[in-house]
Amino acid sequence: MQQAVISFSDDLLLSLNMSVGELVSSMRKEYATKMYQQGKLTLGQGAEFCEICLYDFTALLAVQYIPVINYEIEDLDRELESIGVI
Image 1 (spheres, helix red, strand yellow):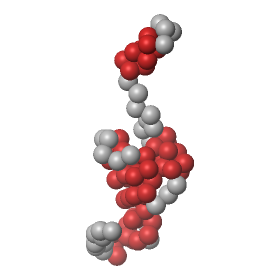
Image 2 (cartoon, rainbow, N blue to C red):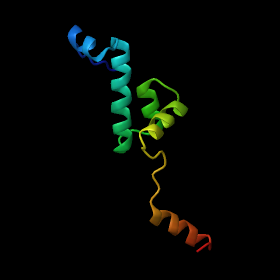
Image 3 (cartoon, rainbow, N blue to C red):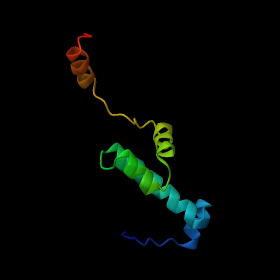
């Protein structure tokens, strides 16, 4: 497992009114949702990065209006056509 070290001044933490743990958790969630949205992380990887369960990660995505299932309308049309629905 790789580790990264990020330094924060006490003033920054006071300004944000957050503990180090809260800031790290918030940063993990922000980064994971952006990387998921860009297709760089899977749902499982995003949840793992945030250190939360898959259900909570999908809920986090929903709150930010990030689709959990990325399904193009053209793909749906092809599938429906292939089974004779349209």
